Length: 164
Image (tube, rainbow, N blue to C red; front, side):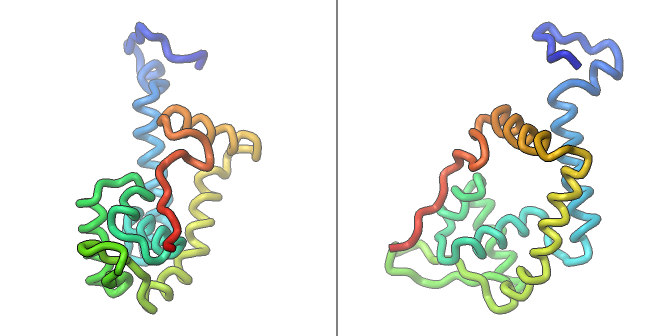
């Protein structure tokens, strides 16, 4: 594929299959299928995994900080945290940093879950990139990041700040 023609004509399946929109959609399906094959038996979703990883990396974030770290809206994060709290993996605690905000922490059950899922996270990443050489992996990450306008690794997404 030499590039996308700005006057793109979609007269054949070959042309359609080469469009960025189609390839990104298929890539999303590939990620989901790979996640399900590796972690479906654990009983959490890929989105829940992201939230658990983020809280493990930086305990004590407030909902707005977690939303910023994941590039999600606060309402989505609020529902996700509530579900993970109901499952016993996360807990919210009062904080002196804000009157309304509460800090989010892993529970002992959440820490146990993290220990179980950690090896699977690495396996998923290896599976997603197994057909690429090392330099191609770096290039792929760079190009996807650039296409999405989020910079390159490390991404330019807002990062939560450490607690004082």
